[in-house]
Image 1 (cartoon, helix red, strand yellow):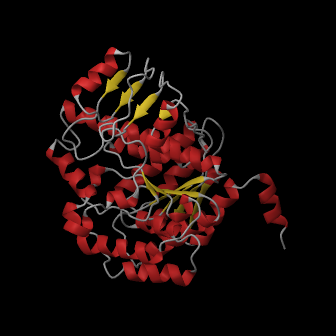
Image 2 (cartoon, one colour):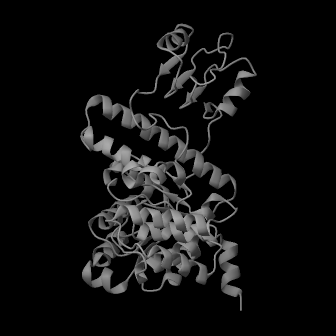
Length: 396
């Protein structure tokens, strides 16, 4: 797993700001995404030499100019954007769904930002919008590093991915299988990461959301969701997710056991948001988002049946494993033997490719199975420390 360090030079909350103000100096610090226009702090006697204020809101342009005059650097928030131009942390599902209760799918935060994205050029924005989006995505990068560092500091286990088709309807055997894998990995101490869309990805985060639940509880939640199986009707689809969240919400424990992480993109913002992840790292740039998912999930990836997007992720991940660009690689587990050997026979190409890796034969990392429990066991066997593997082998 890639290790991240949180920086003591970053101030990302008003509480952290107050603690630093008490010392009389913000010199050299980076102040990120804070509302300094509401109940503004007194900075008149504080040392702000080489302080960087990025994506913050101020009472006036004159206030910003005064900070610059005194030696600070200011990259202000962009006005008139429906999203923060430098978020100080990852999104919560409640924030992504904000506005749904009052105005339905069309009025929720996630949809409003997607429509703004489309109205401003989509994947080809103008220079101002491109800069605002890149600043936002940099804030998500930073928030993601903080979240992973928090997870690692708490003794978190392998970071594992679950990929697959976004069109898998709720209630199918494929959906329930992905949910069982997500639950099994989260229950064993892994951090489950998905691409944040519907289908297999929602199912995996749902499983992590119900990490401590019984089979009957998980089946009951899936049954409730299956009353609105198709995301092409987004209002009842989203309403069902919010109802299940409210009814089955876990009451405590680390955030990885309350849904794990999703990494979606507004490029696919027409799809309803996956509301079962505990933390949501939503990007404008799909290219950054794809690389981020695969860079994080070095503890192994389960690939459920999917189409072009899933196949892209398979071979992008294989490139990282082949060249070891992001360190050692966990397993590639393919769920669905017929699909991955006959419909899309990627194993036929992938096995000889990984066998020729410059760092040595990596083909042993591949597993094709029909059993969710076998998929979980492969990931856990690879990611467990040596003493845990020995104990597993010698247990009667």
